[in-house]
Length: 139
Length: 347
Image (cartoon, rainbow over the protein chains, first blue to last red):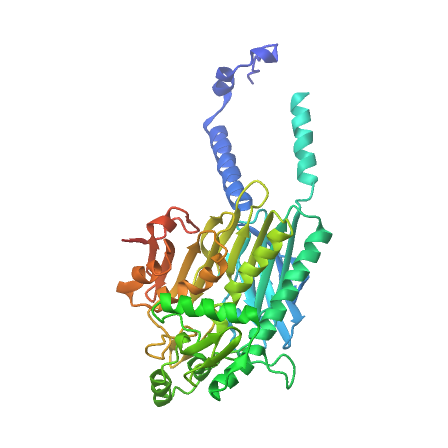
């Protein structure tokens, strides 16, 4: 077995020497971890990544839930009970007592800043993330 | 040591709460969203409550079909009844001013913005809280168009008012939200509020900015549950959109939206959304509400002409085929949410 003869002072351990001792597999590990960091940064730190859903009932914030769960929330609005589904990073109106059903037709909200409003039942959903991409929505 | 100090400052500043007060309420038959920056929470709350109360009063007075309480019709409802009976009546000075203003805007739009077609709007079932398919009575619609109700049929002498045409039925649905925006912006400025963002049912006006950056607004995609683009709304500017996706019903696989062409009596089907950006004036809110309608209704060849009628330079049209058309001035301001979006510049 060969004993590697490292220089005694760490200061003289320069980059050239490090490169000399790294094998192809080491480089691949470094590359893979860089890709991983970049991917996670992109996914989790971008403005669009939604972390929670805020439910408003009338003029008040009813509740906020993490999107990182599977859950059904039942909310009693002006007209009756609405069902809001939360599932793996997204949320939607699953059921609503209103006749137009615009809120249900909006489908899944997936990105921070997205909103679904049920005017007749006075319930709204908004996905929240790290940063708001805008202050208010023009529609 | 210096780095430690910077780190400490960063930590402290990130712990401090941003002086932003945000309120959402259901008034005006829609969602009202108000942000105030740089005031204490107590003061911001008082100011917002006052604005909301003013909105509610205005809503009660101008509601086209709902009484304030049972047996107590709104001021506008009473006025419409008087028009129908050919009677003259007395109205409050601010309503008189609103109607004079709406008449002028209607003329400016060559009658495409026409708040006198309440009977048509009612026939199509849009004077209800919720919309569902109606029986389309072609004969009745053509009769209502032939009645030719116009804002110029209304005669105003001081605060006395009458209509020379009994078919005039006012519906200020395309004016009142804009008026309320101007009212609220005026009130908040009077109260020395430096920074606020007021959103009434999608129509927005900005005062000042959000801390050290401008207020940022998202524009709703007409067919997806997300914004299509964002833009900075500088101090005093207003933005409004007319869309076929907020009030509509489906019948026989066809979409019938609440924006009715007064010339045909039928809902417009060639356009999904029109957005206008309006420069500062004491009228910016009203214009953001009114100016999108004629562009929405006008045939594709004449959209630019309709925009010019109100000196609108910043506008975007999304037509029935989802083609996006943007004026050069607005294109410079937009940040598309989907970077690969295809759009054309309106010549």
